[in-house]
Length: 259
Image 1 (cartoon, rainbow, N blue to C red):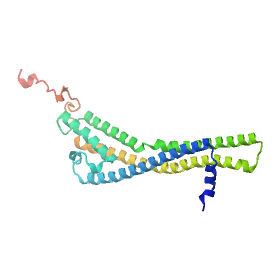
Image 2: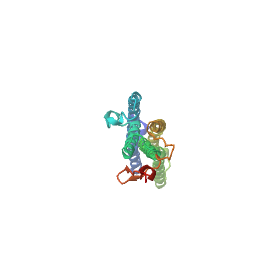
Image 3: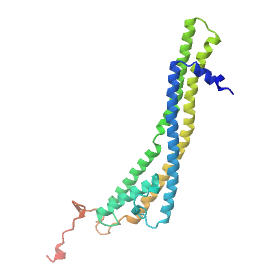
Image 4: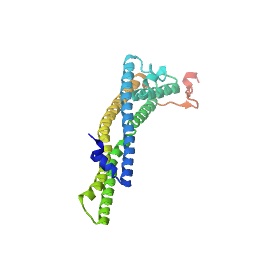
């Protein structure tokens, strides 16, 4: 088929300056959208693969901090689940160093919980980054195309009015060149729509898995590292530290000293 005789080629050859500008803007928008789509597909595929690798390692260890003590592992970079685990372990060891023991009190565990929530939020934002571009392409692409079409039809009817001659031959090139802008707008919006729906579903799945793992990790930390209260005076919950993180020793009682 000779494309030079097709409707698209005919419309483009008769496009006005305004129509060409509109199509150029939509083409740029399409390139940006496809760049985001490709990057998001690669990001989510990498995240899923690295999450699976991390869970494989995590399921084989007997101690929650084994993987953390190996330092940052390059092979697990790009895994949101590994970032969540590493952030929680980092705060846990910070609290352990602060209190000088593996078992930390409840308010120390609260700091670990906050760290997990912070990393979880950052990971969710990272997974959703760029989606606003696709949402804008879906809603804005057809309107930009419609603007070009309306503008082109307006120019066509203005030309007919000036020529005072309304024939099909006179109207056809202008109308065709105007409609190509709408076609271009839909070509931007339709792929973005399908890819956006697919990516949103994948992102929600990964976010839900992260949320579940965060809850699991918090339970493990509480079970392994939360200090239980003393039955006598709840001294584990009320810690009095000197500057520098050392606990202030209690003054000996008169009964203990014999005075």
